[in-house]
Length: 259
Ligand SMILES: C[S@@+](CC[C@H](N)C(=O)[O-])C[C@H]1O[C@@H](n2cnc3c(N)ncnc32)[C@H](O)[C@@H]1O
Image (tube, rainbow, N blue to C red; front, side):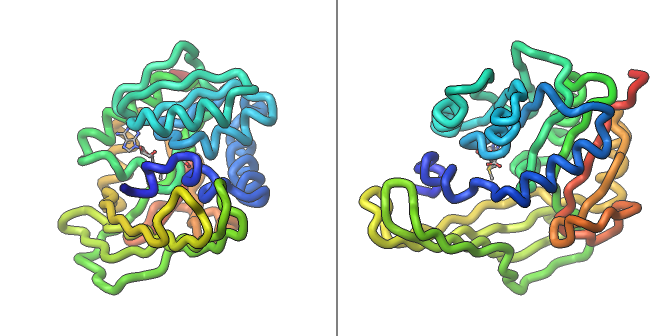
């Protein structure tokens, strides 16, 4: 069993704080000409990022490969207008079209296997956005040969877990390898006093990384333009270019108004 097999607990572990939500919304508002009314997430998990937009009155649409995640997202969003699909983010399909914004954070785009898949995904998002609409996407930019030293990415303690008890979550980057274009992530969860969860869980998965120049050319081929670039370690700082070895970035891609 992995943490993904407990979507309701996963939802409570990942729920963003108010500051993160404000940050994300500020970025989107800076590029969009009006506040978003329709927002989608192509790898929505338990609806973590869609929920705050739904609470603000947006229509939200979520897609995920795992039906357990979609079932959890349905619970989180039940009081709000929404649609949810089980599917691959390469071929998105929603009842609604002309979305104002698409959000895909936590480098989740890196779950796709290769650049061909990335291009297919970018084009699929592009088709569902209105002209002028934006795609806020997190990704890992890495060009150098390899880094083998494990690096702590994120850790958080939880006093009140869903279903009782407390826990500690830790994300570690085990290595980054530019030749294989991947970063291996390790997730560990320690818990105490929760009846559903074993005391310790560990899992690893690989995320696709992007050499800076390849990423720029993929974005260009998809038809998007890069509107803004943020370093996730310093969200206040707006970068001017996608530099080699930039690490974890959040990009705001925009579908041109005339398209
Ligand atoms: C780290 S979670 C992020 C979930 C969500 N965006 C959030 O912020 O909570 C990554 C999600 O990507 C989904 N996923 C992985 N590959 C996918 C694919 N090819 N198409 C759609 N979803 C995928 C997984 O099932 C998982 O729910």
